[in-house]
Image: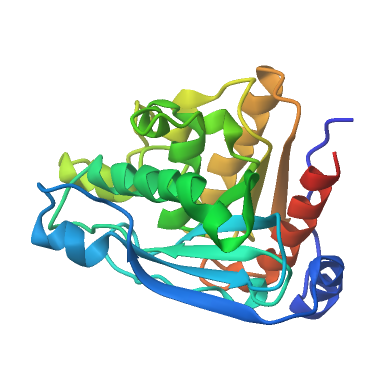
Amino acid sequence: MLTRLLLLAATTACLASTSAALAADGDYSLAEDIQYRDGDDLTDYQKERCRLDVYYPAKQKQFATVVWFHGGGLKAGNRSVPKGLKEQGIAVVAVNYRLHPKVTAPAYIEDAAAAVAWTFRNIEQYGGARDRIFVSGHSAGGYLTSMVGLDKRWLAAHQIDADKIAGLIPYSGHTITHFTVRAERGIDGKQPIVDELAPLFHVRKDAPPLLLITGDRELEMLGRYEENAYLWRMMQVVEHPDTTLYELDGYNHGQMAEPAHPLLLRFVKRVLAQ
């Protein structure tokens, strides 16, 4: 049954217990500073920023992978593997991408798509499975997650079908056009826009499974919860079979990522069990 889920009282402690099922024994390895774009025409800035790390369970095979995009408003931030996703029996591909003002839209999305495409083409070398790749990220990273997964053209440029992504898990991501993209056009951050650079513009029935997570609607940035609630509603309207929304009561925009990680892990386990 398709339902909207609202988490009324969440704490890191009570959610952490749900992650144990994905935990696995064994060592983990980290391959660092891998350039995910190639070609003779790369700029120095692309060579600097278009890099990723692969954190993976070295003694497992066919494991699931989460491609993780950091937040920072498309203007700041650096890649890291979230603590809550370490030693959970999955790989994490932590990605850097180019930032405003050195680039403008859609460069951020192009980089995100290139990193996901790299993962599809290379994760098997580390022991992972191409059909178990999930995409996630917090804030700006959540926006990039939704754009890459819902607007198929970005991955199509790399001959990858976005529907091959096992699942999308944006944390507190914009579903309207991102405020930095609007600022590039001289549009105020309180003026909502839905155009081709908005995840909402690309609502579709055949998208990968979608888990939307936000902080408390009264503590989030502007209308971030309501944006995600509207995306949830529109996915119901188009009869998407697997969209879920969680609101983490009591957590603001910056605080919500850590208690969201067990929800991601539970989602990964459920999707893989289908």
